Image (cartoon, rainbow, N blue to C red):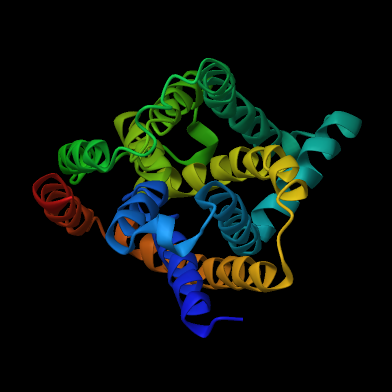
Amino acid sequence: MNFIDLIKYVILGAIQGFTEPIPVSSSGHLLIFENLIGGNNLNVDFGLLATLTNFGSLIAIAILFRKDIIKLFKSFFGYLSTKKQEYYDNYKYCWLIVIGTIPAAIMGIIVTKLGLFDALEKNVKFVGVTLLITALFLFLIRKLKGKKDSDEITYKDALVVGLFQTVALLPGISRSGATIVGGMTRKFKRETAFNFSFILYIPISLATTILGISDLINSNLSLNMWIYYISATIIAGIITYFATIWFKNIVKNGKLIYFVIYCLIIGSLVLLFL
């Protein structure tokens, strides 16, 4: 086992873990880092790495929202079996998540089958452009203070947020950023937008992980490579956990301007130097 290579994988896991929950695009940052270090020399399967580290991030988000997830499951099946009104709001919330997931699921299948973005997936300049676009949208909604709580979200709201999530299929567009912007445009409270965005992340991330299982099975990794990838996955999960808590406070306090500045700087540097 090469210790230097292990450190590189740990760094890649840390990048994924930190950038997954915040509105700066984890996939875009992995591509930027790949260009900086020369990914071909590292012998990294970045598709497989993204799948595994995404799974690490998924576990972290599931742990953070475990109480909400359990409550939603209990309420969904509780309402189906008893029709008690006490379960209805959470039962409806489950359907809001389903509706919010459908647009990205359908578009994801279309994009994958047709290879619509294949030419852009390794284009680091495009990531620079999308980071500037992200900065613009975050700037436009940075001061919005909606009034809608989770029990006031409509099916139309969920669909609109779901449509925003489809934009994140473009390489370099942040999923959390897109869905939070979508929620804020529908007059969600900041915390409501944050929670809906991250609950919405779970089914999409789970589907991505399941679809990547075949690649994992066919990967024929050596023991050393398994150690590298598992290390990156664990680090991604740990850092995602703490980054999500930090980001929640940022959103709650209306400090999205930090990410506006960051995306402007990194996007500009990418366009100028990579």
